[in-house]
Length: 125
Length: 125
DNA sequence: TTCACGCATCGAGGATCTTCGATCTGAGGA
DNA sequence: TCCTCAGATCGAAGATCCTCGATGCGTGAA
Image 1: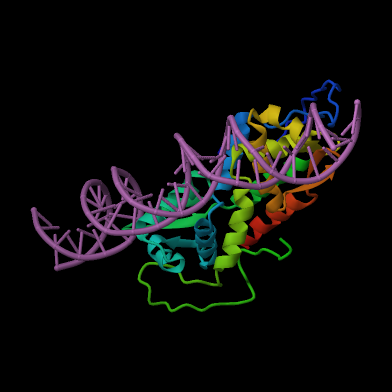
Image 2: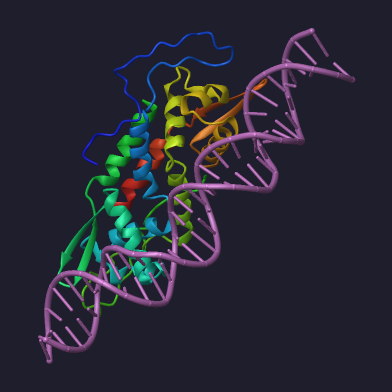
C-alpha cells in the first residue's frame, strides 16, 4: 500500500502501428499487470455489501471507531464472519486495528477513501 | 444507476442507548441494505485485474474508445471472456457500448469514475 | 441469397469467495 | 492458578465468479 498506484503512465508515449482496420491507436501505455492487480485488490475490499455496511457502521460511530461486538448485530452475521471481513479491509489499507484490553477497535484510515478516489480520476486523464 | 448513491444519510440522526460496556455510540444511520448492495456492485466492476486493465487500455486510446478486437490481445484472454467483462462494466455504468457496423466500440463514461470517487468521500463525512 | 466477419450468448469446469460452527489465543478478574 | 470473555483462526459446505470452446445473431460484401 505504500507504493503509488497509477492506472496509466503518461510519461511513456507508445506509438502504435496504424495497420489495424477498425480501431483507434494507443496514445499511451496501459496499466501493467502488477498495478492492475494491486488496484483491483483495493476495490475488491469494497466489492461486498457486507464490507460496505461495516465501513459505514464504523464511520457512523462518533469517535470513528468500533469494536467487533458493535458490528455483528448491524450486519446480522456471525462473529467469525465479521472478523474475516474486517481483516480483509485492514489488509487493503482501508481500516486500522487497535487492540485495547480485551477489545479490538477498528477505525477508517484517514484519507484512504480519498486516495482511492484520486486513483480513479487518473484513469481518464 | 440513475439514483444517487450515499454510504450514509446524514439527515437522519439516530441516538443510541449508551448501555454498551465497551463501544462508542452511533451518531448517524449507517447505509441500508439496498444502498450497500448497489455501491458494492459498482466496486465489484473494478475488483478484477482484467477489468482494470480493460478500462486502462480503453482510456489509453486516443479517441477514448476501443473495439473488442483491440482488447483481446492486450489482456491475453479469449474474445468471449473479454465480452463478458465488458458487459459487466457497461452494467455498472463505467462503460458505454456503441455499435457501428460490424464493430462494437466501448468508451469510458465521462465522470463515472469521479462519481465513484465522490461516493467514497461521503463515507467518512 | 450466400458467405465471411465481429461480437454476444450459452453451458460447463475449475477456482475463489462467503459463511458457519468449532476451536484456539490472550487479556483481565476472582 | 483458574475462569470468563473478546476476538482470531481453522476446516468445510455452499454460492459465486472467471474462463473457455461451441454456437447464435447481425452486419456488410460478393
